[in-house]
Amino acid sequence: MKASLESPEIFKDRLTLARSRLLRYEPFLGYMTLELPTHILEGENALTATAATDGCRYYYNYLWCRQLTDAELVFVVAHEVSHVILLHMSRRNGRQVDRWNAACDYAVNGMLQASCHEGGSLKGIAVMPSMADPKTGRPQPFGLWEKRFANWTAERIYDELERGKTAPGANWDQLLESPSDQKTVDVEASARAAAAKSLVRAREHRQRHGQGDEPGCWERLAEAGLHPTVRWQDRLRRHALSWGFDVISWSRPNPKYRPLGFYFPRHRGYQLPNIIFAFDTSGSISERFLGQMIAELNGLLALASNSLVRVVCCDTEVHLVGDFNANRRLDPMRHTLRGGGGTDFRPVFDYARQEKRFRHLIYFTDTMGTYPGTPPQDLQTIWLVPQDMADPPPFGEVIPLPSSVHQT
Image 1 (spheres, rainbow, N blue to C red):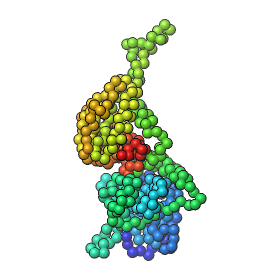
Image 2 (image 1 turned 180 degrees about the vertical axis):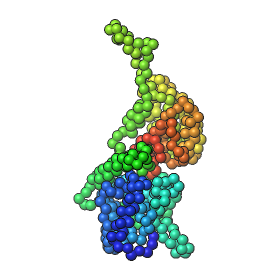
Image 3 (image 1 turned 60 degrees about the vertical axis):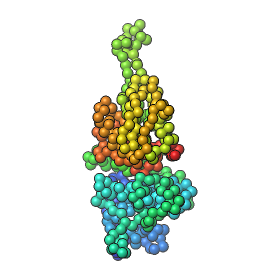
Image 4 (image 1 turned 60 degrees about the horizontal axis):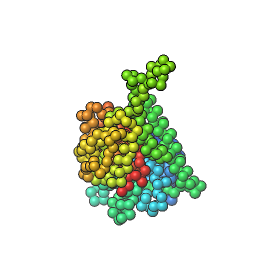
């Protein structure tokens, strides 16, 4: 931050520049800044002394925001947008206001800090606000952020804060209560509508500028949040079955049409391709989560009689469980899922690359691990992950699971 006496007009120009930078480097976040009204406040007794959102609009107090550098202003704008994307206003559910506000800030700042560093979409254009340390004079991050909260949900951080394990830091923004004439459901609907429109515009932006069809991590996060009413089991089956094909036999024609003089093939059933099912068996995965996933795997096996499914589990290394099909189901009493250590997703992708017969992967995980440096080009991937994940997988199809499935 810096000392500044710039006028409101100059600040508004810088705010427009911050939005344009987001549009260029992270289109989805950029379009989200345009979907909801923005209010520039003046005066120390305004609705907020810094920056805020109520889920329906953005607020910036120019007396505070004018002290931000251009890169810090981009960070603050992205911060407010992230609260809307993550539906933080409607997720409070009776929690204490100030503590929930702090938990949401820890979650958002952790995600933005990751985007601002090596390989992130905001690297070079955004930086967390900082202030000079009174002892050393060196700039120190100003805001609620701590490395240990990386990939934590706001709910989990809130529980940690409630137990008194508060990390140091200063909170500079606010989650405002919704206007009295707007119910929480209306605020959530407004945020979802803004995200849906921004996703379409971001996709068109990528195509128009030759940036490909692969959505960024922020788009994946929003897409996961837009499908809460669709049963995750149905989404999984639909995507998995889209990989399969009907098996027909010309050597044994359909006898039903032979008397009519027609030689039609016999339908032998539906077949899934060879699939790898990977279970995350790191220490952060609950037994209940694994039990639900085993049941869903066996349900999928029952849909196809001619399929081979290779089941592996992985914490920091791959452990082969075995091959399964409709006639051989996974029995947790007989087939051990080994693990319990840290989380590294890369060994599973290395294994799939070596086993060239597999081109499809379904991975059950809580997303707290190390991903491959580059997305696999010849391996279609489905991730089953917690609905309130802080950082979605950087590639593949993401299907969120309700909290009732993955909680311990």
